Structures are given as C-alpha cells and as structure tokens.
Length: 274
Image (cartoon, rainbow, N blue to C red; front, side, top):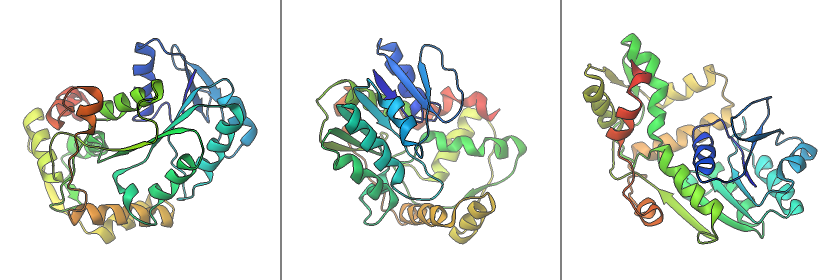
C-alpha cells in the first residue's frame, strides 16, 4: 500500500494515476471527504496525530507533500513520526529547486525526512509548467500578464515527469538516500513560456513587467501568511537573478527518456486557456 498525500493536487493526482496504471494499491490522504476512483481515501490532517496514524497504517511507502499556511516544518515532522511508528519503509518528499538555499522553508522541511532513519528520496523540481494555468482567466479576458521574474530562466518541468520519478522512487529501492533536481529539457523565461502559449493558442498575449514588491502585496491581499509571502518573494528574486538557471539529466536517467518539453505540455492543456 502506498500513501499519497496531496492526492488531489498537481503532482499527487498524477502520482495516483500512474500508480494505479501500474496496478499498485493506493491510499489517498485528504482533509475532506473525497472520492477518487480506484483509491482508498482516508480522512486525515497533519495537525491530528491520531488521524495520521490511521493514514499510514499498513503502508509501505509515502509520497509526502506539505504546504502549510505558515512556513513551518511541523507537518513534515508529524507525518514522519507517524510513518516510523507504523513501520513505513520509505518516504518520497516533494521539495523544490530552492531546497538548496540555506534557511529556506523547503530545505528545513526536507530535514525530518532525511533524519527519519527510513529510506528517503528528495525531489527538487524547477518551476512547474502547470504554474501557467493560474494565468488562464487573464488570458481569456485579455488582461496583460505580470512578469515578476524579468529575464530569469529555469528548467520548466511537466508535473507528469515529477510524478513519474516519484513513482519510481516509491516502488523501488534504487533511489533511496538520493536527492534529485528535476528539470525540463530547456531553460525558459516567463516571456518564452508566454510566446509558446501564443503559438499554441494562435492569439496574442500581452505582458508587462511587475515589481517584486507588488507581487508580495498581491499575495498578502489574497490572504497569504506574511512569512509565506516572504519565502515566495525570495524564490522569485533568486529566479530573476538567474540562480535557478540549471538543467539536469536526472529525469532522463531515471525514466530512460527525455523530459516532456513545455510546448508539449501547452498543447496537451490548450483547452484550459480557451
């Protein structure tokens, strides 16, 4: 049995799908009453140790995704402790490319998994291709998109590739004790991603440069905790400065094929922008 936290999220839903396609037994953890075809769903909360115990009971591996409102590591600690008590064998922790930044929440949230004494794998993906989905309403309405990261480039990755790597790590021992920086096949700026969408959709998409301060203010206006906004702004600043402009071969080495490029992702999801 494999437990998937964040099972209805961007990568978690794809991890569930790919595990089911392999014939694996899957349990999904959710804070709400949720139905997922072919999957046992357990209602649990990171702040409720008893519910976490039920979630990991009889589980051999966990796909761990945490996203607390405030950047704390309590949720990771709680899940890891429950997993150790239940005899879980391995944890695959979703982090981010900013996980190598000293003091960052992503680096701190990795540590409980590393210190667990269990088999562990850390995944540090670059920017998700699916992050562009947040702009779909603006594109449909013809509203200019704010470019917060200027000319900063990153190895944009399809979430399906992140999930595929996670599935390999969840179902074998080959990747225990390893951390992987996961990227797509090419470095792309925000402007280049928009240009691909323009070609795929056959429409002009206006952009304008936005300031980091304005980005933080927008996050706060949407209810984000100030500490979380600061973490997000720090990551955006590093991206704008070119500090995430790296490509790795990890996806190709693990999956035995090239990573999915952004054009393919855009074509596969064009309906969401129309």
